[in-house]
Amino acid sequence: MTGFKTLEWDNGVLRLLDQRQIPFAMVYLDYTDYRDVATAIREMVVRGAPAIGATAAYGLALAAWHSRASTAEALRAELAEAADVLRASRPTAVNLFGAIKQVLARASDPALTDAESIRAAVLAEAHAIAAADVRTNRQIGLNALPLVPDECTIIHHCNTGSLATVDYGTALGIIRTAHEHGKKVFVLVDETRPRLQGARLTSWELKMLGIPHMVIADGASGHYMRTMGVDLCLVGCDRVAANGDTANKIGTYNLAVVAHENGVPFYVVGPTTTIDLATPTGDHIEIEERPAREVTHVGECQVTPDGVQVGNPAFDVTPARYITAIITERGVVYPPFEENLRKIIEQA
Ligand code: MRU
Image (cartoon, rainbow, N blue to C red; front, side, top):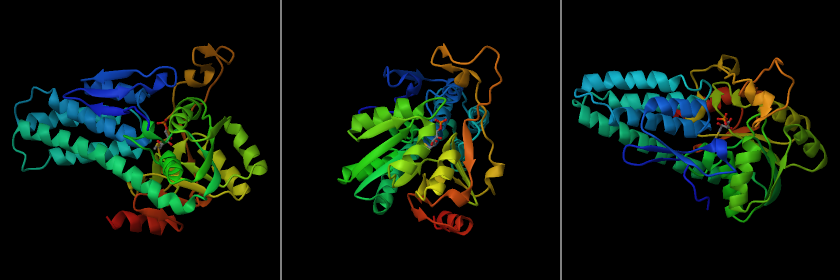
């Protein structure tokens, strides 16, 4: 049991658990304006590809709910404006764009001829996206069970748990399912500089779930793979290109190369909504650059000299050749990814 809700709709209010404060405080923030929701996504009150997708969907629901538009046409115009604001929050995770597209498609149904029915449809679609996310994550966990040895050590990067989704998690969901099925799992938790999603969030979730783990500096994963007998790496994804190249939290590429060097299977985990066949390769994925302060400071403490030049990409791209398989709710996809990703999407 985790006992928290990453995001929740409550009668015209979107409630988000402020992930910037975890593990020190559990604070929920209430939102009624979609513009503030876009800011919350940008500032990482909520983060993780599936969670920001669902949050953006509820952002549109807020726009519809609180709008004074009295005609279908006026409301659709406001929704288009809100969608632009929400899309501009973070560029890399395709789930954000997919969820917005799905909600707008529902709102544009010609059968909806008045503002009231559009309002209801937009909210229903946001609820559907949120509910599908939880179902999907549980299925991913079950699909991965045969890949997880009964007793094993797993390296995990960033946070892909309940906090990164509506509930249950993707890569962390696999670890959770394996644990629930009695497997003896030990997790090496990459701390995940600079935002420390591993150290702050993943260890918080694993502790709550009673799953044995150890937080390590990102640079220590190679050492442990060479000396400790790591069985597999599990990471999430923000966008999987048509050829299997995968954008995920910065540091994933390094982990994949070291896993390859040490013969450790490297699994990317995510819902099929993270697969973007319209993006041919990883070179076409926009990588978000985040504020320098995330690197120059740890919390409030400055750790670099004043005025130093800083690079802070939030994600990197792992070339498909380093990926053993991509685990989704529709099954485990092996190379050749170009062919097999297309098949799994078209089978819908
Ligand atoms: O910058 P973040 O914390 O939003 O990045 C999160 C990740 O990179 C996750 O691995 C990814 O979104 C998958 S979460 C299920």
